[in-house]
Image (cartoon, rainbow, N blue to C red; front, side):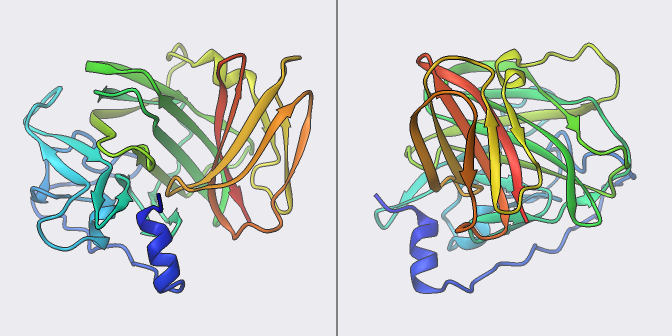
Length: 285
């Protein structure tokens, strides 16, 4: 089944939607904080202040992002859902930056170096959902982290995405991205109460930490060091959840050719031993 973004690319490959105007009425945003981190502020029931979503592609009355009144704290949380419209699956994507075709870009001003992104999530399904955080300096990615789930999380549960920097510089921009499963109608992710942790001791996903993917950003190729002797498969997805490259039955290190991919943000997922060995966000420059 084609996804929503497949149809857009077929009908208008040059379409790029710019970020909606950010409404600051009634809120105050400080440097080095997550704007509207508790999702208490909304311009409408389908438009969270400071967050852009795939709703910008949709007609009135159709939404992948809605305000959820069953919050972990406060009055509201954000709910993202993959929906079906005209036989097209449309994933729920939310970002502090810009939602573009098959990518996200931009972000908010940020100059600190936190250890992790934490918050509370619900995931009432057994599909794949994803959270990523990225840090940039002069347009180049210098750090980031990610968290994902495939198991059901029926009640609010804390999550933590460890952040790793691969530069000694401080960033000038931060972006956060949420993504529901683009291949599963009804895939749902509910998020509330985001925080950046600056102290050590945050929860770390050890399976993800085992995986070594470099360089990042990448130009024509990226290297996978699975740090395991097991056979593994890999898949590369663009930020809209479309699989753009894959490899199967691999042992040891692997160089992945990226020359055919457009510049942008991608997610690589490595699976082996009947489990996910790791996920990582990388930039193709």
